[in-house]
Length: 461
Image 1 (cartoon, helix red, strand yellow):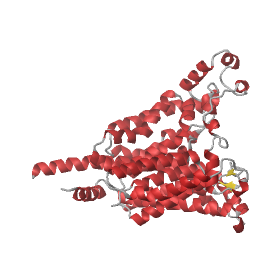
Image 2: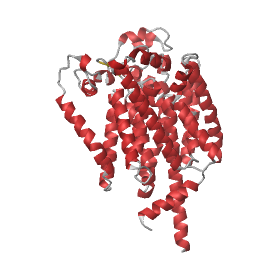
Image 3: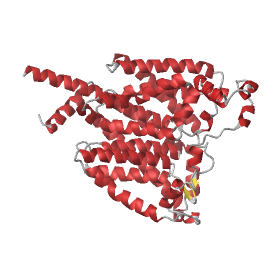
Image 4: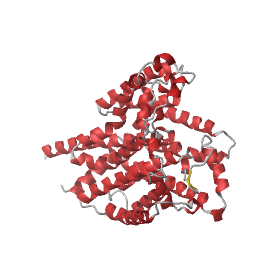
């Protein structure tokens, strides 16, 4: 059996193995679309209902569906070590949340860390043909809305900037002032936040780019990838753009080694043009009103005009210890070394309530902030849970890796975005992450079952 015959046999097997009915597939897909398009629902009501109320209602609907997934997974067959990790993670975060109830009462963050991971089971029974179509549709939707947002924000002749600001404030009222680079407004897209939108684009873009050509036409891949790249550029989220650039480079190298040259040529021309133009950008940009997108990228990259020092800061502020509301004795903290306070804050967690550790508050690195907030034990368990697909991919054989590769790329890219902020843990992003996570585990399970079936068939011949 050659590679093409093997792939066709696997696709037929996967399409029928443990699949759910059409109604379940529609509901699961609708839940994912609902989590990502909640900003459009706010716009649909035109401000008649507070966005926070709509978001909370949508989160409640998703949570109810998640509870169904929690009970439904008990009759599924999947890696036992993943089951153990999920339940341990749930126990650790319940223990963490009990004292947190008296402090910040951040119920949503607790649910995101402990309960929402069970969303993955909704995609255990959905064949990849539907997952591919769903994720391609979402990339088109997120990219298109992001590009439209940038156009109406930054083309003066349209005179739509004020109207766009009204829409943006409906979606994200907590961000009063628009974020900009010079005169250019950063595109916030469907989520109302450039960081959330760029995180969505990062996962979806790398997934589509990593798809094998037997599952997506060259024309469709070209359109979706270019739309995704343009939309990502318009968010001017440089950290996420760097993460995507690294992911794209690795995907292109992976394809080149396997003599699959389309991805390499697909990305070579725009990358060459962009880098060439960037090299011509002057070092001192005085007329910020005349900035174009590439100039804005240069300003965000250039250490002289960017804020990289803020991202990697390790400066401490003694005055913070005098803040009211801390649960840790001020005089006792003042008499201890920074090292003792930081290590104690890391072990205890609840940094927002105790204010014992400082580094977890000042850093912009999402995973580190989370580590100081949830405590070392809970964080390590959660870290293993979200990194579990990477561990599976590393230990899998070549045949299994081939089916896992697009999902692995999307998951690894999503995790890499946590080097700046924690947009991955927002409602718009976390459900997408676990949907791809669940599809990844399905492919792993199906691959194991297919290889066992193939071995049995060979023995019976």
